[in-house]
Length: 120
Image (cartoon, rainbow, N blue to C red; front, side, top):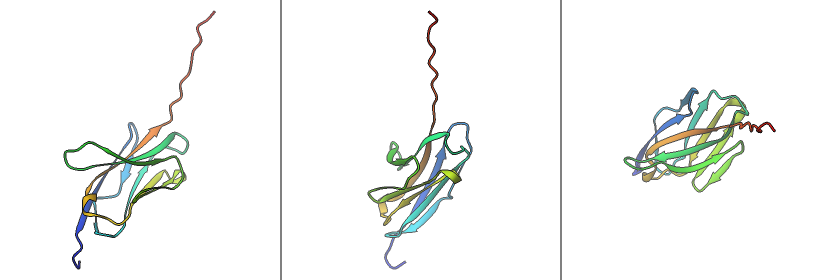
């Protein structure tokens, strides 16, 4: 691989009471881009945003970015949300040795609160 190191990226997707599928573990060459996909079975309109995090061994979750529907860039990370197809893709640009981690996709469900008024 001409002096480039190889990174392994894992993904965990999650939302309560929903089925989520994910890209399998991936590896990529240093300085290449990696794309990680997360798909879910929540219909369009029933969640607010898609959030992405990563966790390195024995550390807390680290927030990367989130978006409702548009593409978003945050440093070396790009997020594309496709609400019509219930999926998102996280792009990690120019992989570095420190990017090896477990990547998490999470959905924020839409919450509807009904307010009741006491009878007068």
